[in-house]
Length: 176
Image 1 (tube, helix red, strand yellow):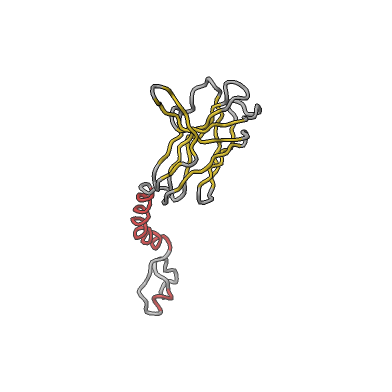
Image 2: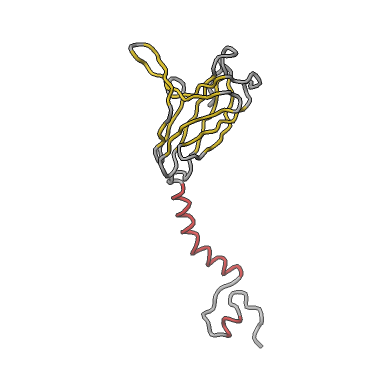
């Protein structure tokens, strides 16, 4: 009498005259041997791809040195698969926020308001001390060093992203 437990070949397949397929542990190993190279290749490629959506990191704000004066905000935006235009940034602990750019002109540091900032597909835009930055007007006295404030980034197509920004004291070092 033939044994009834055929762990590597199903009885129905053999009885139907089909090519036997491995099942159980042997079947799982065979499937992994076929699928593993494709999965590994896909994982390697994802490290090379740019994010599909816009991302923001290194988000922080410097509190005003004197109450009633403006604070400032900094961040880096990473473009997604398509170009975008940043048109506004708001902060939940500020009455008003403006985008500005610092520059040297005739040996003097000057600053001007900017209405929009293009973000190329897959590109990067940095707001940092001495360059592009946010001016935060009417910063709440409730926001203290070490707290977080929520920044909302608005783009010309109507999309928005929100990121927490670490609040840093006026004389403190920038976060790493």
